[in-house]
Image (cartoon, rainbow, N blue to C red; front, side, top):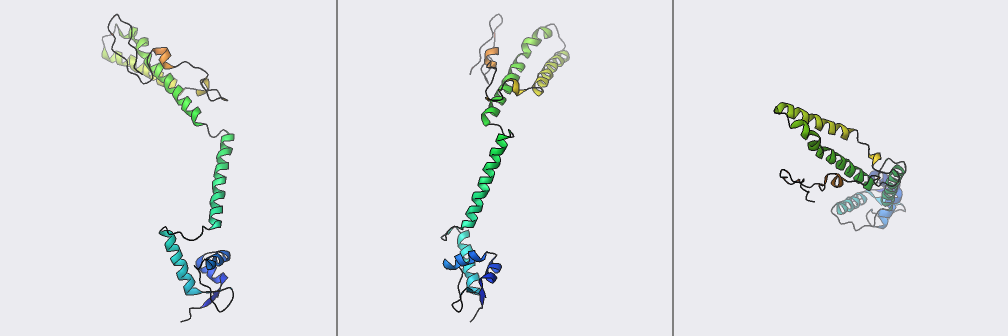
Length: 198
C-alpha cells in the first residue's frame, strides 16, 4: 500500500520541525526516506518513526543524539541569566549574602540589647507602684519605645558600605554580660547579676 511520498518541507511542517532537523532525523533512521526520489519522504513511515522517537525520549530512552539547537538555546539562556545577575550585582541591586547576614545580626543584637535594658530602666519606676495596670502601662511604653527604635534602625551605622563588615565591633554580650541566645540565671538579693550560658 502506497502511503504517499512528500518533500522535506511538507514533512517539516507536519512534524513542526525545521527541514534541517528532518534531514538529521532521516540520517538517524527516525524519519523514513522514500526510495523513489531524492529529498522525498514516506508520510506514514515518517510520522510513525517520529512518534516512536518521541515516546522513547519521554520514557528516558534518549538514545538519539542531543539536539544541538536545543542545547545551544539552553546555553544562551543560562549565559543571559548569569549576565543579568552580574549586572544587578554591579548596579548594587543585589547584596552579598555576608553583608545581609551581618546586617541582620547587628539589628537583632541591637534590638536584644534594647529589650534587655528595659528591666534596668524601669525597675526604679516600678518599685513604688502597687497598681498592676500602671506597671503594665509603663512596661508597654518601654517595649513600644524599643520597637520604634527597631523600625528606625539604620544598618549603615554598623556596616561599612565598601567592606560589608561591621564598623562598631561591640556586641550585646559585651554590653549586658549575657551570650547571644543565652538564658539569664536567677539572681539572689544582694548578689551580682548571673551570667548567661552561651
